Image (cartoon, rainbow, N blue to C red; front, side, top):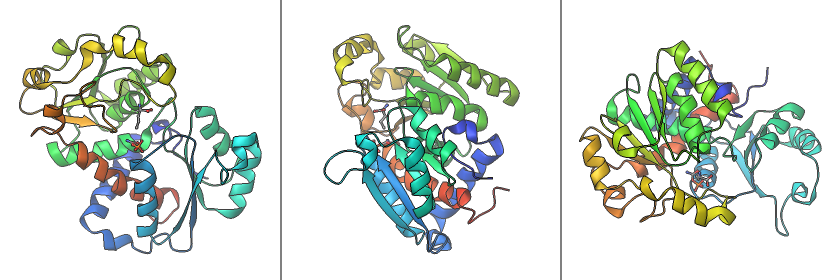
Length: 312
Ligand code: CP
Ligand code: NVA
């Protein structure tokens, strides 16, 4: 059966930790997988901008001995998808050429459609709904800094967005409690919240909602922040900046959380909005470890999805 990463719902708790374990192994010894995917070709479709995702996938694919094709959906060299070729036809055509598709796009339906109509693994590299590759790298980073993800408490400070959704699904899979601290008018998606709560009940962890950053961060092991204006929300920027004005992570908030708390951000950051320079560059910040771990976690994911290593 072809496996995908459309969202973390595609991974069981054991699968999730398998990706993290393999990512840790790969980071310790990158040469162990230098030919793991030799002879494979992987398409990467980007309908939104990217620095970390595109570069870490491109470098990672090369480090596994495979070929990557970075494709856009616009401009003179863009794919016909940008001119209306259907997801159905795109999935069927690419399945004849490449061994997997990594896609960053707007609607989750594009990711789901590629998986439905193609015959190769589809990896969600960010949609308006989810960012699962980020969450996998984040679990690796939390383990590195706290020794484990189990029993830890992650407090999200910001809008209930794509990155928040993936962390809410990651928490129960990694034995971690997640607090989504967001403005009342920018809550997480109701389906994701219900799903995360059900997963947490099964795992014996917690998913909480809060609207007060100063109360929520007390005792946190991780404080996590993201841009206030996600890609595709530019027209709403003024409203979002106003709604999120009290959700900046600054030194006062980090002090309230305590010395054990690490600061995380998926990047790119808007310094002076969701986070201050002092926190970004401060001793509790692990944001560049997160960026690095995208490389290792995605290599692990590709190896598992493409059968170069067993899931169990
Ligand atoms: N965090 C992340 O996905 O970064 P990019 O948008 O630069 O890929
Ligand atoms: N929430 C952000 C994440 C960027 C990596 C966005 O979707 O733009």
